[in-house]
Image (spheres, rainbow, N blue to C red):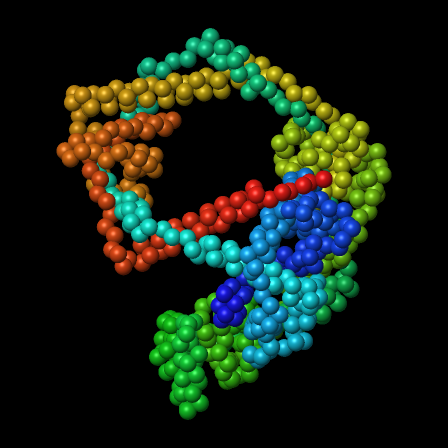
Length: 615
């Protein structure tokens, strides 16, 4: 096993392990490796080994940060701290069980193996050679010491070997993959009879007594929820910028400062683009050699470049300023002198050679032409500097105030009103879950305090207070009568469509005549992903059992506006070649799924066998 580790040290496994270490061990440190220091309070004991409170709280903090960073608008008030603590403790227990299992199996790396692994990792190399300074700097950036990192690698690498060994050992019978692919590539031939809702509308009626009965039996569905009317202040960067005055002197100074940027530079480039791959470096070396021998850049672009449009013009891309090309391409282009050719440049499109053909500069536009633009830019820059200060002032002022009028007057802001906000929210800014939760909190709803200052968007903050509370109330029948009638009509229409479809299927199965053949639509040899028939029809047609030769299988699907009777007439399994790439991919996919299932089962088995004590 250790020899395999050495051979793979520069491969995918090594990169995964380093990634895992950076993610987890820079968070947990040595406590996660050696179980913390003796004598510390523990949150759980797994087979006699402690998980310390310090380790637990550290991981809880980092998991909270991870979940916050995953939010579009991070808001700590939205975190479920109890759930985070439960998830973290379960995760630490599972990890501890796996570590103990690895130790019991005698899976370990000795110091020489750790040294060999570290020195071969590209992350710690300079010009292809191990560099101790880079190694130490990288490890310290993780928040770890060298000894901690070595022990962390020892543990994580072995654990990964267990996981990889179980997952890679999974086997799927070839016949299972073949059969699944046959079914996946299956085609079906069928006929469809469409019964529209209009065909049964004469049989559908709803009486007033039925409406009243439904209202009484479902009274809970017809309530106006509790709601509040609120006052609020919004502080936004945009509004702050609009209210800032920019003097002519400030504008002139800003114009002069921006002069270099306002004079736009455009560069005319030519390039030769080749595909990235194992032969890319050799191909580029050949092109550079031929250029050095005096051959034309344009001719070589026509011969080699996969950018066929520019290749026809000798690689010419025309003039362009900054922000047009790929970042790596732009950086190389704007570093060239006129007539100079770059070294090979890798971008998302492939590998380029770039030649700078020409540079042209535009004049700085007169101040009068761009005055409004510059005023907005300068106002926003000044607002950026002031926003944090004003936000802090508003937070402090609103916290101490008995209303919002004082803070609004103090900062020159407007108090606005919003009505009928429920616990589900309301119109912006009360579509923000954290702000609504604050509004309905005990301190705000019952004690009459202002909410905290809540960030509801980028550089937009809101503080609010309840002005009036409205209890939940039953809506009168008169207000919901027509809604109930429409619901009952839709329900009865669906029931009538089901009844009509069932009657037709009964006749078909008995061999009796039904609607004329002209009303049936025929579909021949449709694949599962075909869009020729409606999705509901396709789903039902492919769920019916295979018909006998010369017979048909019948089924139905019903929507709000139609019923479809389906007569399945033929099923043809897909053909599968033994050397088909599709079969190979499916076999690998099924094996991966089975491996993941077996690994999860193995983890659960160890967890079930462990003695876990939670004080």
